[in-house]
Image (tube, rainbow, N blue to C red; front, side, top):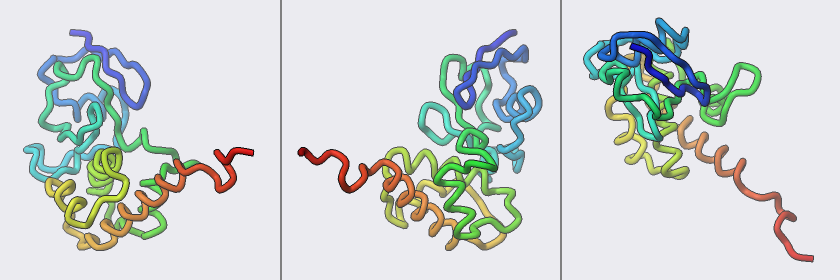
Length: 166
């Protein structure tokens, strides 16, 4: 059955069993390998993507539920040459160790920062509660998300002279 998905702003028609988990379609059909297969049970968060602004565990969502919805993967946040604010912050703070969980962490953080560019540490911890990291870089991940919020706010602020009348 052909299903139309919008991933990172681009339409894709995939011919798969409608019950296929989104993660398999992203990795197998669309060659978007940022979302990782971790536990396959929705318990580790390494497969997290954003659907219509909400963090979703892609190993648990059948693709038939996603037609017409906007899916964002870590590849949609920026490029190697032009990383997005979240990616830039993770690089600046050196928040990744092995890196396996980082795409899922970034996507949970992306959903949070879209709602709240200045989250508290408690709000960050709550947003990332379903994302596990075994490397122990939790403090750097918190710092990177705070930094990403700063970068996002700076990017949206007008220049000092901008907006002043005459």
